Length: 242
Ligand SMILES: *Cc1c(COP(=O)(O)O)cnc(C)c1O
Image (tube, rainbow, N blue to C red; front, side):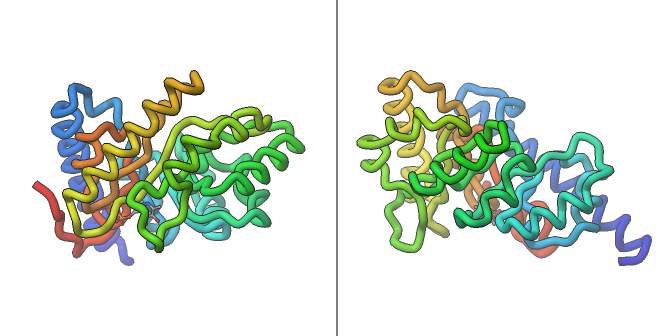
């Protein structure tokens, strides 16, 4: 990108950010909340360090990556950017845990007890506590990873005692291209959370759901952390909602 292209992309990122914040605010109000109660993560997995830097210049501060190696690369490139934070949102293999813990604010994708255990043990060994979300396959699609809701209803207790992790909430991904299904899925995540909260006494305050095509629905149904990629970074993306 030359100087002019960088300026144009930065300006576009800035206006997309304004639009997104506006749409989050509308959706939050529809559910009796303020837009400021909903966190916005810019999913930078498809762009390079330059685009990430331009996004920071356009006002984005919280980023998310789905691969440990790419996370390391982006962290390195973003070292001088004030206030920047990263989350891990992708499938994590137990042998890659050490590449992620201590570097991210939140791991969204804890999809099995085995992974929870691995993160806990390695965090404990480094004397840190890793904040995590449990990924739930609310929609039940075979292609999706995560705990089945019944699995958590029956067995979250075993993970509550793990030292080295703090379970902060739940994360899910909705079926694509089906707004009604997506709404049911987000609603289901919140119901599940409310049930687990009542039973365990844990706050489970974070509900991470909503992507480019469905984030307004997610916020209407209670999401307080949306993960947006294309609608921020892809110049050709056409919004699917509202
Ligand atoms: C890529 C990704 C996103 C962002 O998806 P978009 O549709 O581009 O907004 C959100 N969450 C996860 C887990 C992802 O892998």
